[in-house]
Length: 292
Length: 292
Image (cartoon, chains in turn purple, orange):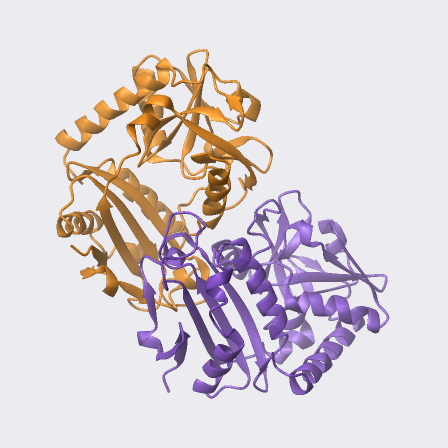
């Protein structure tokens, strides 16, 4: 069955879902996105994805355009049209035609697009054995207004991932311009030192992920203290345990960075207890909570 | 008359020139652009625009896709279809559908788009009186692989320009993450100190413009020494003369940055002689040189 894509209120076959070459998303990367994961037909923490999207749309002058849409309804329609319950959902919102500056689009030219595909989770062995990551030369810019916005200007991340993949790694690790630890190419980073969880602060130039937030809430209830701050790379590399968080991969243990083995080289006990607790949280929220 | 847009070998009316929502240009900003200016039907230094585009396409894994096109022919066809000789020409090349990393597109899904519009030059008074620029807080990242590539991830520049425009300025001036002068939001920067021309080096995190290159060639023939390097902001602000260079604006005098008046507050003699010499160069190259 050909996949159906939501575009501006309609569900169209993939081949027909198109946008103008004059859309400022195409011309200037003037647009936003969210990647979400649905479990049993419900997007985990949809309200947080929408809050982040709305907040970014305000910064970019697009909030009133976005407000024209019932986004939760559009996501449900897209999943239903593709008969999906376990889904990867990608929302893209571009600025449409208009001025060569931040400004609302010409009437009705903004584009809201939603793609939903069957979720294919990472192989179980990745969770059991942990993954290898690679440090890349590229630096995050903590002084860029885009570092905290999930804009479609995502090419740096593709470059970082490609560089890591060429080194046989599954994720690139980026420091910021001051040399402090920042984030993965599509994830946030955590590590454990003496039973305490550490993660780079938002001011380190990261995009604060929805899963990152959930872990920071969850950890204290399991008895683990947490700290957000400026993290030295050597502290990350000499950690007892390390993992990344992302919407699609949830919690993924990192057991090696370049040639450096993290801790004992296998997923640690605190990482494992967080993985189990996160899955319980997801089950609880996606089965009992009302979908907003 | 409705404008005609070149897309993948065809010239289509603006409303019909569309690309897939799954193009990685739309999803991830995975694409490149060039902005060119045609005088009397000929693009100034087209070969240099194409060299820069090709070099960037190589870095992004798209060179073989780009090589399928006769780009000079496509530009000429687009100008002819729109009956233009004095034109602003915007070329956009996006990666098409494919993997979520740097990789060639799925067969024939890359998109080459060319828009040509009548060139409306800045008002003569801007050249006669000079313009006001504004320093913005945002910093260029000299350590980003994108700082030297003209990618469609251009949203930072739109944000910078919008911030400058809100301060009543016509261009934003950006320093890099180390505090050195970098570039304008859509221009390169020059200043004159004791009859010598200074401009930030490429390693300052700038995109090296075609007009910038031309000025660096032209200045010595007029008897002015040039220096590229790491430039302190205060040296720029205390210059005798300052100007920006861009394909569309050519050489535009800057007479004020925020509240600071540059030199005597009017376009200086060296700036004026370069403006005249640049226009002679453009006339010479676009009337006598064979178009490649």
